[in-house]
Length: 171
Image (cartoon, rainbow, N blue to C red; front, side):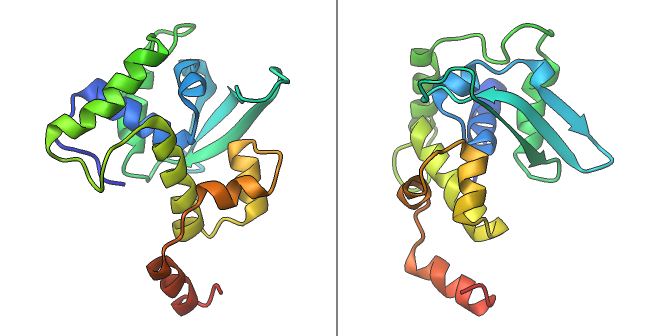
C-alpha cells in the first residue's frame, strides 16, 4: 500500500489506521488511545477490544497485532500519541471519514482508481494473504468474520499473485 505524499498528517493517520486494522469506518472511528498497546520487545502494537460493529451481538470485539516495522504504523501511532486518553483517535463522524478517504483522488497520487473505506479493508485482506500467507481461518480471526466465504469475497488475488505464491512453494 502506498501513501500519497501530499496528504495531510490526519488523513495519513486515518488511511494507515483503516488499512492496518482492516476495520470498518465505524470501528475505526470508535478507537481510543488506550486500545493501542505498544509492545516494543515483541515488535508489535496490540490493538485491543476493537468492536466488530456489523454483528448483531454488539459485545463482540477483536484483539490483534500490528507490526511496528510496517511502514504505515508510524502514521497510525502519531495520531494515537496525540490523542488524550478516553477521547476517540478520530473524533469525527462517518461522513467526515468518507470525505477524507475520497479526497485521496484530489492529490494526484491516487493509485489504481478510487478509494473508499471498504476498499482499504479488501486491500488489507489481500495483503495479509500475499505477504503474510494468512489462511482463511486466520483472516476470519483477524477481521472477526463468522463465515468462511467472507475471506474469498475480500481477498482478491490476481493471476500474478498466484504465480508469486507458486514460486514461493506456497501453492
